Structure formats: structure tokens, C-alpha cells
Length: 62
Image (tube, rainbow, N blue to C red; front, side, top):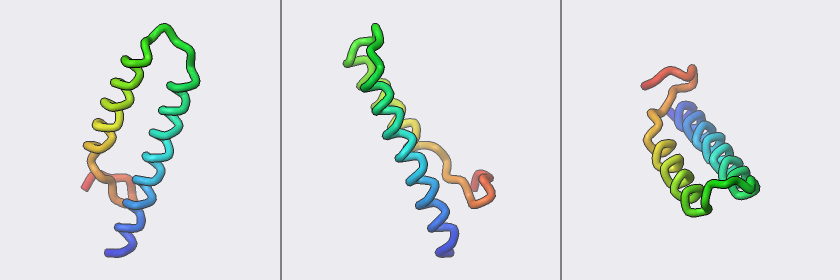
């Protein structure tokens, strides 16, 4: 139904926002980790988030 679709869209927006914040945090942090390793971590994190099972509005796995 449309409501479930809206919930999914909202969830994805939240995840996308959080991923953006993680990217910013990694970019800001001056760590001993090389930039290349940070970039790889972001790529892996993005891939992992893309594979996260979708949740319904109660937060239960479909």
C-alpha cells in the first residue's frame, strides 16, 4: 500500500542522511588511516546499507 511505500521512502531517507553524516565525519577526522582506506570503508558501508533488509512500519523484517 501507499503508506508502507511512504514509510520505506522515509527509512531510506534516514539511512541516506546517516550515511552522508558518516562520510562527512570520516572526511573531517584527521586519522592515521589513509584516505584510500577511508574511501574503501565508505564504499563497503554503502554496499552494506544497500543490502540491509527492508523493515515494515513496525520495524519488523518483511
